[in-house]
Length: 351
Figure (tube, rainbow, N blue to C red):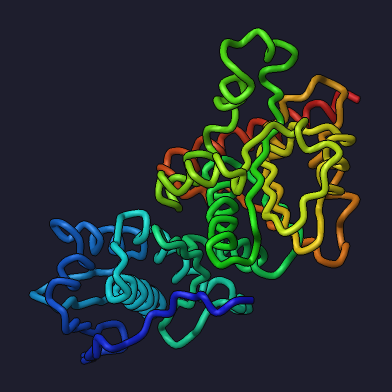
């Protein structure tokens, strides 16, 4: 576990004046930060009100919070953390507010969660590169980011929009900048292309790039574009289809396999056995989105069964509540999962 953690500190000197147990006033010393914290037209405070069912009334650089004891403490915890982000030079977006609320609620819902501090502060895992710092927005993301630091092989499985791939690439970029690894290898199975790959125009890079675009996007978000281009040219960052991994030993490298649900059992075994000395491996995928031909078992599903309990292997499972994209995405995921469950039950009933 490394020491790169975002801890909300209190140089803001918050003043708490209580008229009853469910009401207090937070005053922030820096007026500019307070304005950014509350959001344009107080949108961040309104979001906290909606999600936690509290009353948050701003006045200058202060905010009066009232409501149920648990909810008001959660609001305080979220605001304290977000103010700390501003003090550390980060910005506060609506998605950051959503994440802070989730984590504040989790501090009460998951009493044994080791990454929470109970005294009105959030201690969230984070990934930092020279270009960007990313903090956990859900308890599962927090567990995932800490597993990436701790384990040599990490499986991140669950629905789209939960940050599995993005955080994996961010972690790899962080390791490269630290000098903990010499290179990054990013791979995906090009299942959609099948045998038609050779008929696509351009050289091999042109043919496979469309399938690897999400990995490029995450890289450019965490590292300056010119640095990414130079690293790719120098071979420090390699982005390639899974088939290109055969016969290699990947030492001193952070290796990521994305969309792993579309690997066969043989492909997955081949990939996992590429791990070399001082290597770190991250496998991401969604077992509910398998595109393999009917009757072909997913290598990801099999690996999760075979490697259960193996030392050095961590498995982090994301759910629909961990979706950090538009709230509609979470509702869509839940709807599909419910339909799949009903379909599975009817199939079992027919047998």
